[in-house]
Length: 420
Image 1 (spheres, rainbow, N blue to C red):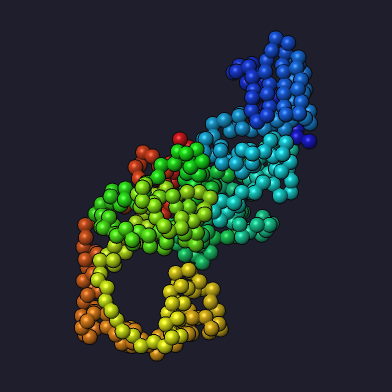
Image 2: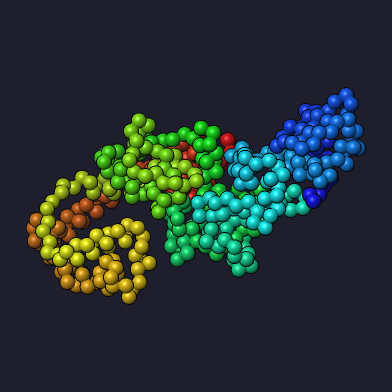
């Protein structure tokens, strides 16, 4: 049975006497009438209660869940921003289930589970109706907290999100490479959403804005048109290449967000936008930075080269491209020589088909067979890149950081003030 504390009773009576003379929230209705207090829930209806009667009645098994639920959302979290509040209510099914159903689920052994990117949030309820939240990587589901690295400060999530399990820097916070082996147990509501915001900045705000039809989407053309300096060249990337950009970067295997931006509002991209729980509202800085390089590469004219390969070697090159593109190289066992991207098979192919100058079948990149000409061409391109005027990579206006929070970190991590 849920226990009603004095804080709940005091807040409820204060609200009835000093504020609106009534409560109407999540199936609980309490009104002040000439005959006393009238109380209604989906299963009970009582009227003519005195002040003392009401204080006693809200502690009963029938009414305690409703009273503590009202106190949690309307008193304790009354100043919590609308996006965070909506997310936490979503995490316990408040948008679909009644109080009794939710309390039953919250007090069960499993609690209420929400998957968000690569993490899971489990909401539970103590004997006084207080919510507690456990946040961890989905791969650590069911692992005892003592077997994981325990954290209590939401700011620790910033460091956790910076490196993957192999200690490599993660420039994209929404990449599916979040490290495992940690847990934030027994968080209160505020610390829970704060932790998530450090792991996935602005994801809660953008999710809720989308649910309410308020998400401001900035499409490709609008984004590239505002780039300056060295990034201004991105506006020259052909429309067809933007499809390849989206296919390369904006899929579930590379980013956990769901791409909602298109080429323009009236020109939809054919590339799959992913299935993430939270939306991507504009091309991120990582996409723009990569597109700058692709823009330069797409300026090159196509040439025809002739190589000597066996059919199996041609298929092996295709397998190597697939393995690198899909990030599977590290999964291929050394002994699996039937896999085209196997290290030994690849080294054998290099030994057979690549000369001492690193040229496939000895074929030079430039028409001239002089290797020094090839090196000069490469150096000229590099010098050209480095001598261009510096500019800024623009992701949005500073005065609206709810939607424009940077989730890539080429220039540092930007936190978002998400509740507007």
